[in-house]
Image (cartoon, rainbow, N blue to C red; front, side, top):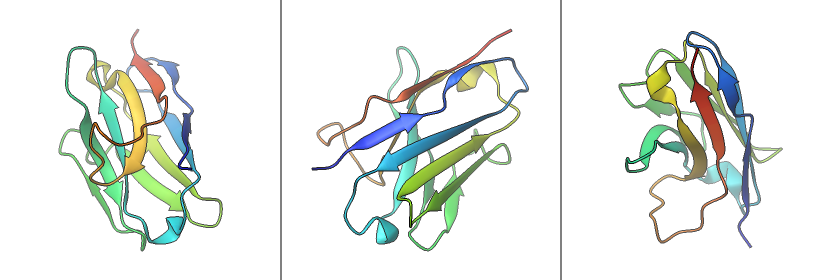
Length: 116
C-alpha cells in the first residue's frame, strides 16, 4: 500500500528557509518521477518541482532559483530545500508521483507559513 509522509513544515519569516522531507513507501521508488506540490487556501493544487529517477529536476517559474528538489533512492525519501521564502509560498506542501491527480492517494501534507 502506498504511503507518503511529508514533514518539515512550519512558520518562518520572509527570507527564511525550510527543508521538507517526504518518506515514500513506493515500490521501485528509484525509477519513479516524483514531485512536490502545494495548495494555498482557495487555490488549486500546483506542481512546484519535480525530479526524475535519475535526478533531473525542473521547477515552476515561481520557485526557480529559490527551491531545490532532491532525492535519496536508498532511503526512499524526497526533499525540498526552500530558501528566500516569500509570503506567497504559504501553502500545504505535498509530495507525490509526477502526474498524480485528485483521484490518486495523497498524504496529509505539511503546512508552510511564511509570515513576519
